[in-house]
Length: 136
Image 1 (spheres, rainbow, N blue to C red):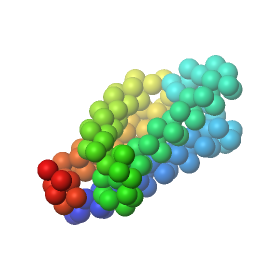
Image 2 (image 1 turned 135 degrees about the vertical axis):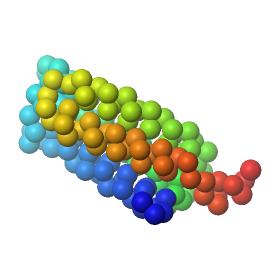
Image 3 (image 1 turned 180 degrees about the vertical axis):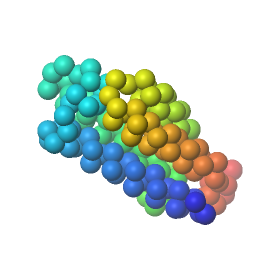
Image 4 (image 1 turned 120 degrees about the vertical axis):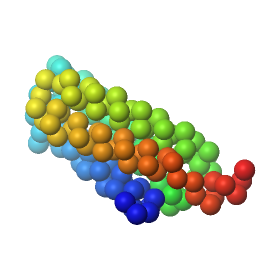
């Protein structure tokens, strides 16, 4: 990607697609056996982990939006850079756990998605925006 904004938009699009996927699991359009390594036993547990995932993905989107100055939320701006590195770590760990999953969907679809998100997030974390350098 040529600009940090394009990198950020790519991350946001992938995060949006993941949110839609998790909502499809909650709605019952995707079998719960295909997610979470097929280890979720009850509908209640499924709802809890899926809602936690959706909230985390929304937080990730907020961090990306703050990094590229598309939102002006003073409380998150100082945390955006740290948040991007934590996101990259999360996506790297997620890649590994997806590779070890029992389901082919997680191994062959979501492993590359997580690895792509890790790479994009690292790329965005390495960029310094003018608003970040002016306050130092």
